[in-house]
Length: 309
Image (cartoon, rainbow, N blue to C red; front, side, top):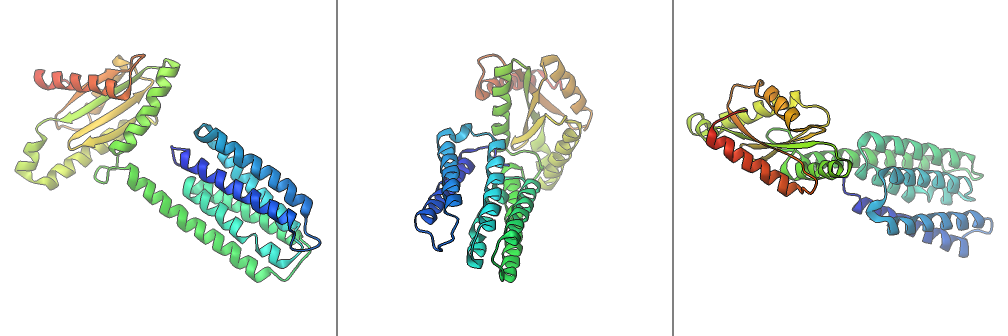
């Protein structure tokens, strides 16, 4: 799931606002004498209100509210399908189905997107079956199958793109950008709650010698071995990232300085290769840059005085 809510909230606001506008147009200029004008008006009020709320709240919108909005959209699609007076009107729900499915697939984890699409097609199909018109079975089945296929394809593609964007391709740990984003969130929470938080910079000793003597393939293999060994020792809340070259960074939530040193000694037991470490525990007025600067200064002192990790 996207950590940054700006794009999903903005797009959701657009989708709700446009949908509300279309419903309002359908209420003012109905295409059939028996069109459910009252339902169009109520739907327009709901969707325009939600769209406005998302515009106003912006990034303050919680993820649960975004999930709830998609669920609400599924319910409204089912109601509109149920009250449709023509087969064309029922099949006309197609763009809404596809739009909701693609939105969920792009912004939600694949498992959550699948649940949303399951609820969507179930509600929409139930509404279509309960509707008065008939003769739409073949196009409706085609529509549902297409929605599911497009959602699955987009979900898998989005998952792969998110993995590629946040993961170091060599070691499989978080890359610098992803690590900094998550570390900043941990720092903000620690400063707000007063919970201890420690950061460590891990730098391999004489790594260049490995590349010079055994080749870059051996150096890459060593980086992978170290990262894998460290990762196996991490707690679920810890975050390991590759900062560049032979330098790694570690975020240790709910860990003070003594606890961090104890944990680092455990990491040292995972591999024989020597590495040095700089450690800093968060202070009240810290930023990510300031706490990492202290960790880097600590690393410099460790390098000068000899390895202690």
